[in-house]
Length: 382
Image 1 (spheres, rainbow, N blue to C red):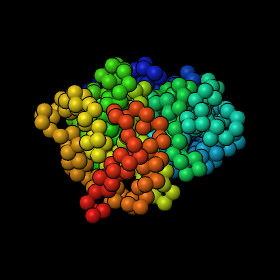
Image 2: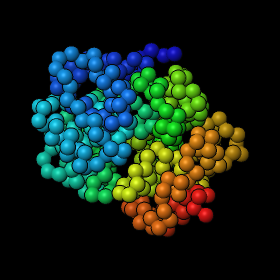
Image 3: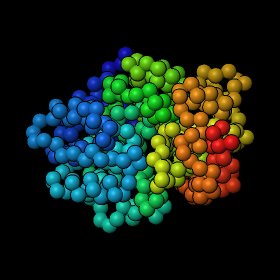
Image 4: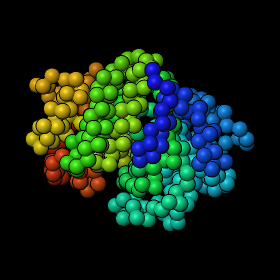
């Protein structure tokens, strides 16, 4: 296996088994003496977050361990108050994409005036986010979102899942340690792994011209396709965990190309008040319908994806993803996740307005979105 390597691409990531042990040195490099540690109840309950923080010398750390499944404005406000009361000077995020995105929201709002909504992408917030963002160190405990090397945060505000986007939201440093994923349960391994695979596929299919990002995306597809079933079946497989965390990071590095229809639908579904839907699971369930819709616009790219995934030339990518979801034990469709048919028209309307829709492989109408959503309901809806 590889040792710890330093990768400088958009931000700086220390990657490899044991990378989390660099936290004290990295905080010193970032000038952070009193960090707010942001995590979620599940990660805190396992003792994983405390284990990462334990080597830090000095006073006891300040914690916010209330990150919800989908980060919310209310949680950001609560964490900001704790940060201010404790006199913190930086943020450490330990967890999945929700904790890291929430940490970005905190790092933004402890240094910027006004409300969180002022900085949303849809409100022209990109230009309002400055270099004043508090330093953040991101330590992922899942291999899925890649938010530790991403410039965006997704936060639920007023019933909408909004994108906060800026080069200043890149974490100052990322510590990507596959060791932290060895105990991840099979279902979460599968769901977060499909998130990573979806990122690599969807960004590769984006029509924007960025060959370096496409090369990274294809490498991520190869790693995820080759490792996700082994990582789910044998969570202690160090090679599989290493490759899944690398695929996760690569998926986020390719966000420069934009996303597409899968995320345009997943974002409003993740903002539904009456359900708490896991983002990676949504991506897995929605991906087959989006692949069928986009196929006419990207036949050459579909062949490259087949090659990267190690598939025969005649294999249908959408069918492959559907069958992979079954083997991984993921839901058969949106209906199995509790989504009702009556919800779909308003989700389709929101999807058509989502920023991710702008870079889909082909133009999508609201009616197209509703059709894909209906196709994604699954057998339980019939």
